[in-house]
Length: 284
Image (cartoon, rainbow, N blue to C red):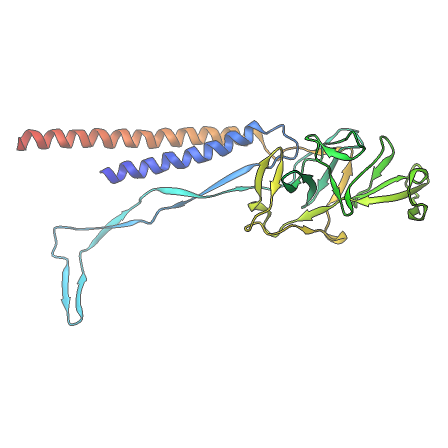
């Protein structure tokens, strides 16, 4: 009977993990570039129930064997298997700001932080005091050649992630190229956004502010080649991939499952108390 209490308690603990993930998703439903958390569980090993009033020892020339008949199985609860991030595509929100950018496809922006290089899908950028393209936290966005320095209203980012500036403001006139689709007529290639990918992106570690850190499970970042790079959309931001309706339904399911396990513990506790009192009455 005590085993049933521990089994139900493990179910309550599992629902607590799931509730934490759902609550975090709902809290970040309006966070740009946020990717929702998902939990998965696994069952603890089951126990075989055997009939104990039989002589279950069977002798044979090589020793003995347990021959008590199996009458069923007893579950021993569940435990958290893993907590991972679902990197599905979020919807685009148009901002009409030249500093904002959204990625369509798998990949991450690279950002230089005091703690090392970090990665994000949040393309809500701004122009820093020194003219660098930065995140809202003031961390410079990286290109293939380092931090990207631009001028207000004087740069464009194409779908390949190339950053173009007016040729009149180019430091090196030799970098000028013809751009038929550019309002300036001629533009200079300043740099290319450093977009990276991971072998197992679901295991990236969240660092807050929509930043991720690589680890052994995710693998090291790899700079994406032109044929494998996501499309960059200037003037847009990727919204969180969280559906509030789905998360609210999951929260209701979690609460009901938690209450069900709670009632199981209460029932076991009541039966255990009755058993102890009756034993004391007849053997007192």
